[in-house]
Image 1 (cartoon, helix red, strand yellow):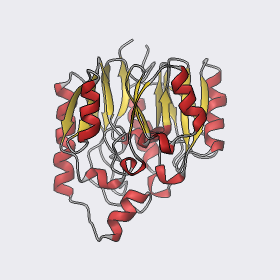
Image 2 (cartoon, rainbow, N blue to C red):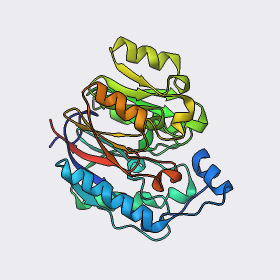
Image 3 (cartoon, rainbow, N blue to C red):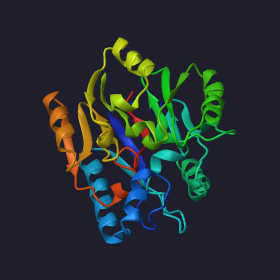
Length: 282
């Protein structure tokens, strides 16, 4: 069985988690700002937004597996972060923030129920799935930002090297949170990026690989402009307020499905953060 061998083939199956117990935590600059304004979670709107998100996947032919949310796990809606999926199976990560550490056992239990093997596990430092990207079938780039450190990146890199993967760490300023907030592949050799947030060596990597880049300003990172989800076949899930990026993607021939995401974004994550891919077409 081959699970996920790249970031842009046709998406077949995803794991999502409803925001049943979602609460704001001061663990990123986006949510910290909302908390300073006295903002509280609008649970009803979050549940509606997530239901629309599920429907968008289903309407695009993607099978959705739902987690049973656990009380006390306030950020479980951001399903991406517990690990990563490659062709051979699951890489289990290691959360940096204490409020998220309890998610690991719940997600691993679900993975076992689904019969997907765990092929690597972060045992040192921190490693989160929002930093993980497959540039191609053999090359992985992984953010070293706020949630993944060098020890975690090196730990996983050693384990998956045996499977033929090369992992390159991409350091960015901590305020950018995860790599998927400032770099996101939306189609083969097409990415939405914040060039101002990314190191020069990584931008040169993309240039040599002849990527087409849709650039957003630094402030766009905090509005989740890069945080969309590739469905494959030139299709993407984005959100309604991401107007400029949506227009630029459409100008490149990409079909954009938009959902009305507002409240969940205040937690510091968007469509990509909310999605754990379980299966892409070979």
